[in-house]
Image 1 (cartoon, one colour):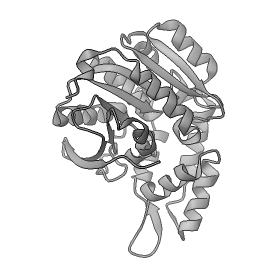
Image 2: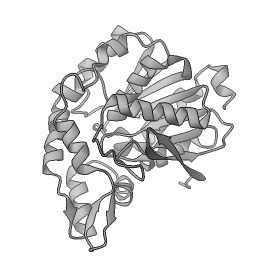
Image 3: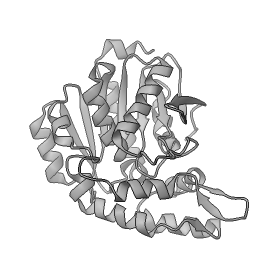
Length: 292
């Protein structure tokens, strides 16, 4: 598939310089995408390829990731991420958009939706729900991964093997994306992380109950079209919790993607894109359709 034309830019958020990527026409209906814990803006590139003929897709390198500044205070919690998103929305002059978030990005999207619902034509959440970050098998797996992640690799082959062990189900294309955008070679020939691996791990492992987002109040108070995309084999968002979310709020619709883990768009890109595209195409929001 041919990659859509891409533009890049920068936004200042309380002194941090944050990087974003944009695909598609500037006057098309905007879709803003937030990646997960150790990911980056370009993880959405193969999703943007399926959307950029009719939507403007904007992906943020959230603080500490990709080309964005690392936070010297290691403030890698939802309130800070949401401030960053607000800065992006303000700089780009977005008046109405759809917000998409995966995992940590999904938690940040829930918080933004609770604080700024007037901006959102719709919300798309990829594989996160109440309790997932604190009490799921997936949350324990992620903690183990953070503890076991090396600071550097001696070669690109060693780095590639590490990511394959971590994400055995993702496609080769998704694996190569992680190699390109999550790692770099330093001046001594070592392969090191682009993201603030130590700071992000420290924040996640030391998070108090107060610092984790309590999602049930946000789920119950959503009053906008919301698509919940769950990996059929997810260890993070259980089928039971996903069903409870739908039962609790009629504005939420659930699609479970077979043969996908927590990393739905990496595991089953075609099914993810077909589901997301169909849902976006069916949104009836004239203000959003006018673009920015």
